[in-house]
Length: 329
Image (tube, rainbow, N blue to C red):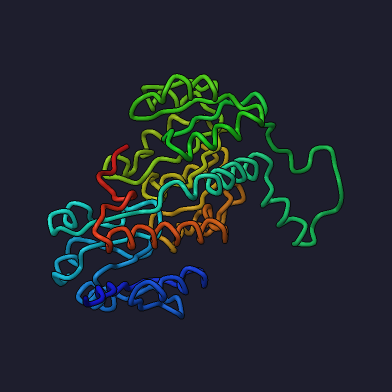
């Protein structure tokens, strides 16, 4: 009996060594050893030849690219949870299965969200820059005053896995938990988190001291925090975004931070990554991170293992557990 042909898997970015080694053992695998972001031409060649494509958030898998795909491309095993860079409708119409890696980054991302809340409220980046600049002259009663977290109101936009994990951390810091979601979470979860549901995002925004964005990027959440909604925030409010840059009108946010119409922001994502609005780069009341909320070695390995399981399950003729059916907020 002939041995079943191993699928050709093309990986668009460098993955942890242990994951790449396992992929090479299980599949015909083409790796991106120098980790350069693939050009459009390289992506076109990949979809024309691969049985399975393993892209990341840096790859735009849009309608035009998918229309270049050969009939052999049957699966896109995304290395990451968010799939806003993939045209799911076109993939579905062409019979291409899409999977992602949910759940494994929840704790890492929630940790970083809490870190950004602390960093903005207590001005950690400003203090660190002050010391490095050589301009620090010693302790003084009114220097580098930040804001106490205990007793403040935290509004979480998107109460999925990450939102709930953030709420658990924030509750331990004495924050009052509020959230906006498509629908309320299970009553037992609300009770555990002592969380208050706001059906109206506008009303919640106007009353929060800190707002954290943890919802996915979908057509419905594009510029969810537009100029009108940003204007609802208190002038002392802190905004933290670890979701996707497109959820916030970045130009308006930068302008309002510059004018001190919003107190501070902690950003891990941007509208046009890796480009950042030049105004943000000049501001002291913003903590800027390079899309690293999920960046732990353990998390990346867990992601890779999920990708491998999804591919192996599909190659064996079964439906992968992590197939993406829809993305809604």
